[in-house]
Length: 93
Image (cartoon, rainbow, N blue to C red; front, side, top):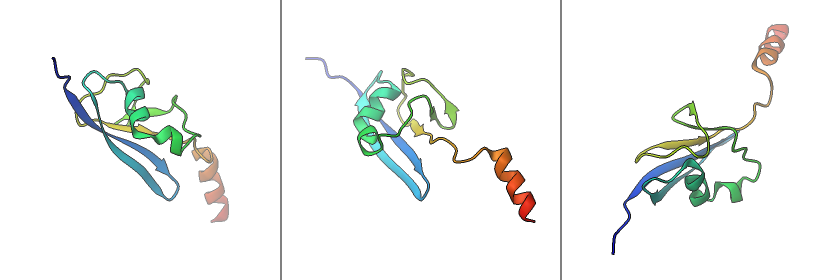
């Protein structure tokens, strides 16, 4: 019987008041989608958009293969356009 190797990855979702992070073990050759499913993030945060994910700050697709030690990051939509936020701050000054 052949034993499948596993890798450990961290799955992180940024929240306004912190982050939700989980370390998961997945089979070698697993994808970002597999790690997100194993972490339970989608169940805890149904608003997650799988079009906004990355590994160490680089945007990737859900079918991206993982390497041991990767950090899968789930990004939230911006609350406000950064240019608009800058304009509002400038007006207040």
